[in-house]
Image 1 (cartoon, rainbow, N blue to C red):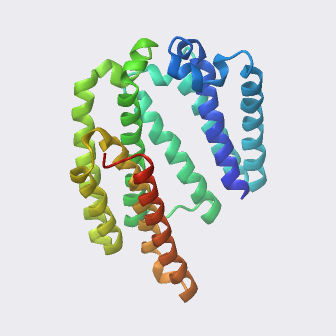
Image 2 (spheres, rainbow, N blue to C red):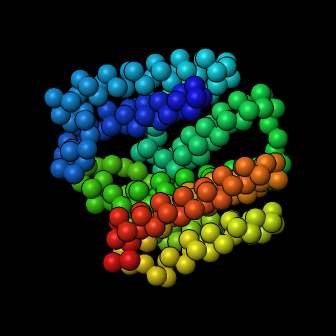
Length: 269
């Protein structure tokens, strides 16, 4: 629990710090101004309190777990500072805002490794492939978010990679990355004998044919379901009978959540 909460507070710190340094830019655009607490004099003090508290709790809880986790969380916080704060401000440097995602997610994954296996990391085929899928998804999600905010970011002079490459070029990059992501994931699951996950990937891809094209960027979010299922299916041989029942319940639960989510965002209309 300390590890989970430490990573959680580090993530909140990272997002809050980004809002803090973006307040001057976000205040120029009505949509971003309403969702940035640092743009309001009323909530600004509360936002700073959250920022400092999350920094302190992330380090404190990380230190409770182990020295390795403390150092990993400290590195997460330092990266968050370099990503948002001038003069370095990686989010405004070509490709570095994308590379940052790999560092960020990679350190979170390594934190889990350090907790469960000390400092010994097993770089077998499955773990390398699974990590590649997670990082791939993070990169695509980052690009999609920047494409979604393209017009707003242009108004606020956000100089990220999508702004510098231009809208149409980035759309082409996104399509290529999506094709590579789904192809690699499907082949990887086939080699590992993860047939249940393969079926979920096919269901995920099929949505691109059925849903409204304006909602295509939402479809990638369903990948989180089959990525978790991928891990559960890979280690199912270690499950007891009760674990197997819980695994089946998990599949039913997440499919139910997915159906609710599709209805909530009107995915097919």
